Length: 245
Length: 137
Image 1 (cartoon, chains in turn green, brown):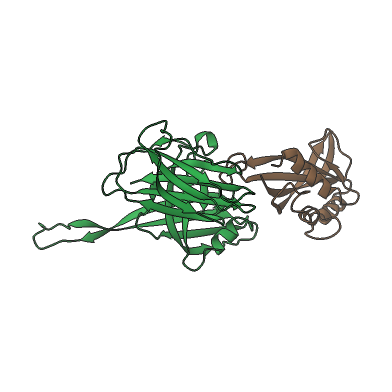
Image 2 (cartoon, rainbow over the protein chains, first blue to last red; image 1 turned 45 degrees about the vertical axis):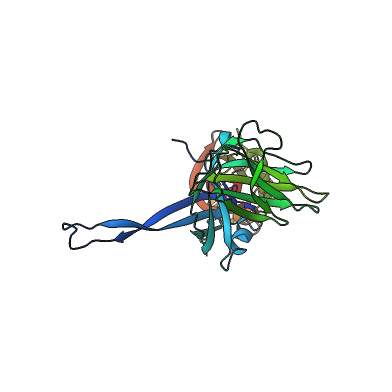
């Protein structure tokens, strides 16, 4: 049983890791009662709508947690990703992650004399995919030259009824960079040059979270993230994940 | 990231602003009263995620010792250090720079407890203990 010490939490364009000390991701399903007179005296139920909640507990930091939460008031849907058990304490490509697009439901600022100032947030799952269990393909990194590309990971094919989900957190952009992130697939590893197919493409010119998906069925099992930096000067700090379900 | 030595030095600097108080950054073999001693803290390492850069909670104890002499005089002397405000107030001196020279995120002096007579190097002193909670990375 691993002890939680280094859970990395990315919230849109903010890295909450160093200010957060508690995270809860909850997925639940409504139980719908379909009992009839013919149910032999017992309740009969079926699964109803899925729902999810995310609770984040952080210390108040006026440059991280406060703008992250206060910037999302008014129904903004934010991409939230958690890497609970990063390899060796540092997020590495290939680490498992949980992610969801969620809407801020409440902010609380518990204030008690003598306590460290805190700011907490609860969010509700806001999109049909619910909580995803995926794989980090690009750990948080700063790039300023070339076309940064992750290693290929065998995440499996996308079967009928499934989708590939692609999420990117951009933590900083300097200069005139306007990056495009491509989630690419390949039938073999190492990928044959020229055989990559882009499944999802996301562009950003500001910090924040981006998310996309593709329901295209494919037998290609190997996946990577390629970043086209755009512009000529400056750098981009980002992280990306892929989930197939 | 702050080290214990940097935080301890910050507390020494704060206490040194109290005129006439002899300040010791670690437990000394002998003291010259009135004296303040910054005792090695207890630490909660994982106040937030991110092991190396995690917020840490340091619980320092600052002991203040005054010459015993006449007991009522010693108690009165100690009162001035325990007062929440004033030129000899330990709480005021420490909380005047909650960053401890820029190495802490915040701090608070939470408690003062009288210690009655304390013996240091075979001599008796009248003392009190301040609890100082320091948050730093």
